[in-house]
Length: 310
Figure (cartoon, rainbow, N blue to C red):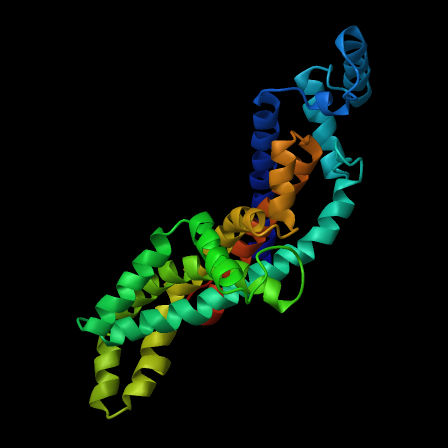
């Protein structure tokens, strides 16, 4: 097991480096000049061009792309993401403040999707072919199909405008987390319910389930102790993938609800061509996704002891 963990961590290094390399080159090919934001608005003509040249020289924007890339990779490996081009604050300090906020929102959405998706999927499998099964699968399909941004705006209209019982945006207490958590959680719960139903339907027809029923085991024990445990094997894998979806979806949700987390920080950096901000945020998200996949693989050993890693 220890060798497997070390191997996976070593394999994660090129994955993470590849992600931030692609983002770096994508930012370089984006139109516009990031140094323009430094030019005072009252500077015009030659004065603005001279000031722009000084900024490019100071931040190394005039250097060859290969030199800029090597400099950036060296600083990143040393844990230095640089300073924001807009605020001049260290990106590491900004991320340190925003990570707990995004983690709080992401964990809440993950727990909500798990608490809703798996029971509904199991119930649909138990009631296979009935109107309950059909209704639950329609709801799951709606949850998967509705875009996050549209769902978010509808919830804001209903619960912040028409029935003003929840705040529409911003950082605060539990009330501020309800709407973004619902948007993130329910969109994943729909997919999780469909996977849970398929997984349960696959195992309930196995011989050991029929044998347990023939021995007089209660239906509850048959479903929970026999069918569900074996059905959890693919579900655990989907849970790990869903964590990555939550990270991706949080970018949109944090923007709509003005939740000051990593997602909103990334969007602000992209819109302002703030290279250090974008690269630092993407690196953090890539590391989180890789670690989530590693934890998922390790949990599979607990769920299915037959799995052995070399």
